[in-house]
Length: 87
Image (cartoon, rainbow, N blue to C red; front, side):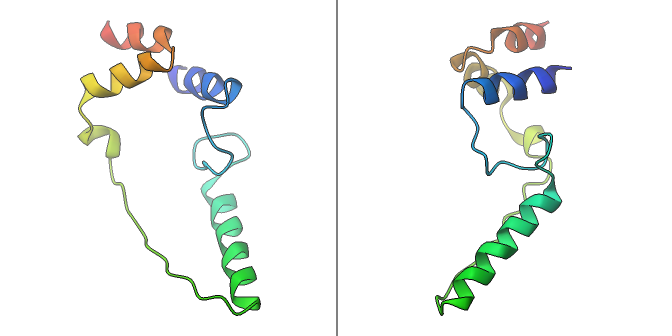
């Protein structure tokens, strides 16, 4: 419930890029991979070189300081989520 509220808020105020995938409706990890593959194929077709760096953020939210994350949430005026998390 909190996640869907946050995604709706972020999308409503254009605070999240269209390139963000994985947790948004119609933007799965598979669609992200297909778009990425298409971009690489286009670059290779015209002879451009490309460097790729893969980052793995395992359990990123478990490692971020929660107080800092809540302050960031409040700065984007998602106070309902922040107050819910403060309990």
